[in-house]
Image (cartoon, rainbow, N blue to C red; front, side, top):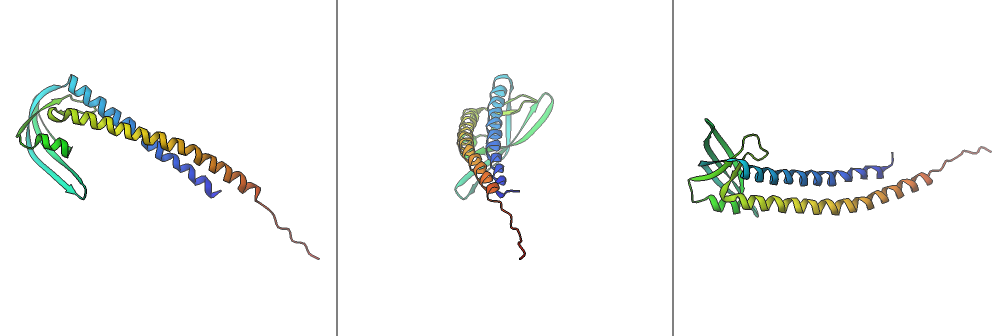
Length: 161
């Protein structure tokens, strides 16, 4: 087996980026669907924390509300921009659609969530295009190296005198 054939695994990177584009598209559509079709509830914030790790800040909020006779309790991760809008309140309005891709949408952070998912999808798509174009050059390189490797094979014959 030629060692250059392992470079075909390069295509896992564009495949993963395609997965990210699809996943962020589903997040965007799911949030939009829940916002448009879900029912509005008032959720109680039971726990709230922001973490600062190196140059990144993120956090989570635990919410609880009653929907259709059931108590729904979820932990939602948040970026700092989203957390800033929720810091001063004990209750927040939410939209809930059971069985949707995004079951819960927080009203105050909906615009940020929607724009973040579109931004993430755009960045992943740009990365997909760049890695796919680069992948064609990788394939040409692999083909050239495997063709040259086959030409370089030679045999040594023993000649006895």
